[in-house]
Image 1 (cartoon, rainbow, N blue to C red):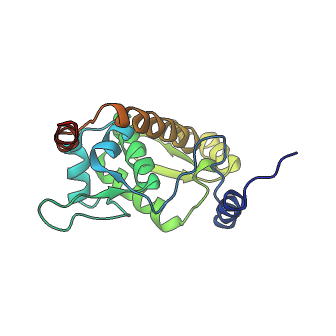
Image 2 (image 1 turned 180 degrees about the horizontal axis):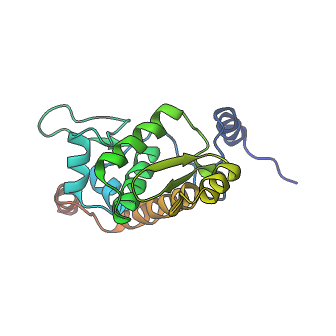
Length: 187
């Protein structure tokens, strides 16, 4: 049996220390690396206008680098993009933006590192953060749960989207600035 390189082993060990388990064959995702707004919006399935509005209203702010004046670019971390996609899913189900703000704040305050084991449940008015099967069953048995969003499934969708976007961005620049740079480099 071949051994993993030391760097990869250390990286995975640090993930276990944090309670993260994103080692399902997808590429390593570093929380310190950032994704530009256009990539974050596309991976989350939202418009850039929504992304900008949510950042300005502090619903989902970039954790890698915020905007620092005109012309600066926000950089979103992987978890930021995951939260963006969760917000989009909650909006699509008809949850009010006010309740979504409460849910996002609840996610931040809970400090949960293993989001793959989390389920967001809603009764159409409120959003509940369930971290165990027992909590989901309890909520449903009381007749409160109307729908649930398995965060682990959304997490894998975001990973796949980022991998696809990374592969296509090298071939096809997705924004005007990147297109200009590519044209300048080609001439």
